[in-house]
Length: 67
Image (tube, rainbow, N blue to C red; front, top):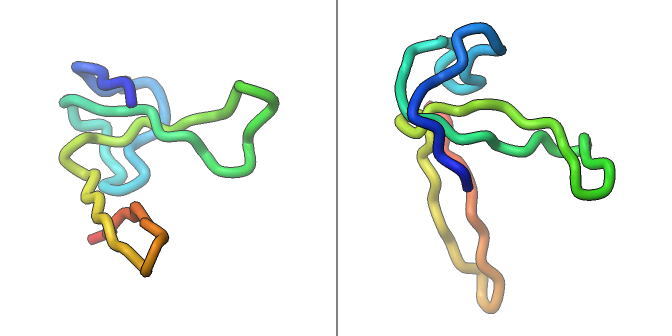
């Protein structure tokens, strides 16, 4: 995951907090937009990312907890 120092104030707001607040962010791929190795992405503040990890037997799932 590539981290950017600031948030793009001209683009779409963060999909979690709905703001353009400045701060570190990452581009997160949007499901279903893939075309080969290229996909659309949304900028998400690092402070808004709340990842969790859980295990179901042999399988591992990484997921996002939303507020």
